[in-house]
Length: 144
Image 1 (cartoon, rainbow, N blue to C red):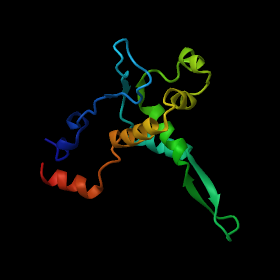
Image 2: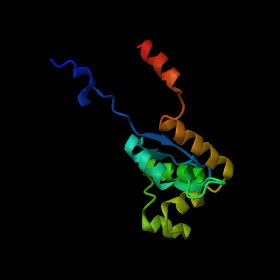
Image 3: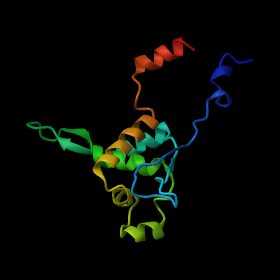
Image 4: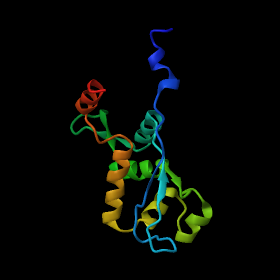
């Protein structure tokens, strides 16, 4: 038995998809808000998204020196789009029904209440693991 056997992929806990109703304005036949299905992003997917949503900003007073700045709004809507399993935000028929051509614009149109959108961004970040500090994770591991 390998000294790394506990670290093997087959021992890794699988993250399950979750359902969440991001808006009260899209309802089923009983008048209940429709749930969307979301998947967890991988670290690689998140890093690729962060890279796509970052821009170089020149450092004041230092020619040819730049720093990275994350475009937070673009990143959050990108995280929502990348995590959404259902509805299919890339579906042309769904986009056409709202008069948009991108999944990001579709999210803004479907969830057009700023309070609900803000709640969704908070929920999606927590869902993707941005709710615990490293110290909380260490404490949880110690208690396991």
